[in-house]
Amino acid sequence: MNLSEALAAGPLLTDGGWGTQLQLLGLGFDECPDVWNLTNPAKVGQVASSYVEAGSRVILSNTFRANRISLAGFGLADQVVEINRSGAAISQRAAGGKALVFASIGPTGKMLMTGEVNPEEVLEAFSEQARGLAEGGADGLVIETMGDLEEATIALRAALSTGLPVVVSFVFDTGRNKDRTMMGVTPEQAAAAMEAEGAFAVGANCGVGIEAYLPVCKRLRSATKLPVWIKANAGLPEIVDGKAVYKTTPEMFASHVPSLVEAGANFVGGCCGSTPAFIRAAAERLARCATS
Image 1 (spheres, rainbow, N blue to C red):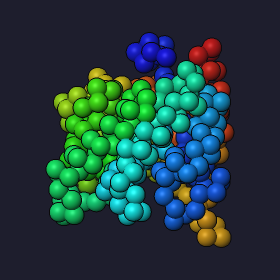
Image 2 (image 1 turned 180 degrees about the vertical axis):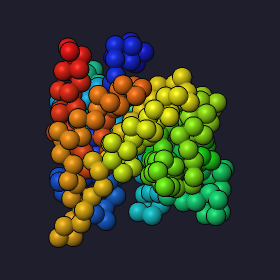
Image 3 (image 1 turned 60 degrees about the horizontal axis):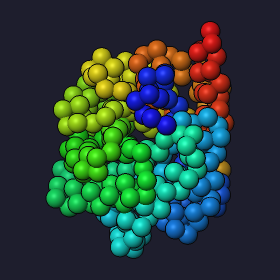
Image 4 (image 1 turned 120 degrees about the vertical axis):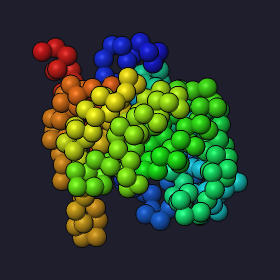
């Protein structure tokens, strides 16, 4: 697949959540998901393949926390490149030429503003991760679930060093209108900063639900000429018998997809709580829109 040609043909459907899918396959709640790229590659590949079969044209990788700073908590800091290389390669094999792989880079989990980490070590950590993902054959990189503009900027600079296209996606779920990140960043500020730094696309993921990202999508579209990436949660979970249960159905989720596309989204998919069924429903809805 050629990215530019694919985008020119219409909105690209991405994948859904990974963590809950891996848990269904046996991942423990206290276990490091990323190391499964080495210890359970077949199960990781099963998740990636399920999204391709559901209709995803862009899939991510099981590498969300696979940076040195996060992996240190599991005693895995010395396996960063191997974990990332394997994660990208697993997704690429599952894609099989039917989808592009935009490998996942999540936050470090540490705060720059409080001095838990410094910019130099964050840059080094993200550069190491991005290098491993590029070596694994990623078609692009997606820096996701960001709340801090400084961390996102550092991650983008690290990712751009690979020469791959880079998406930067923020979580807007704070403030009276749920339209700011936890650090107070607005869609306009995120779009302007990432465009100035050379991002390929900018967007929003996670959050409080797909319907809440419609106004965020409109604001991102108004603030930038870059492609807009939206990957929303299946609503907020309720705790039932000690487990997180998402009440949004695939059909409810998919019903909002045409509105997001109309609002300017170029990439649309799901995040926490969404499954291959959500992507299949979204694909069917997009197909109906294309023929109507």
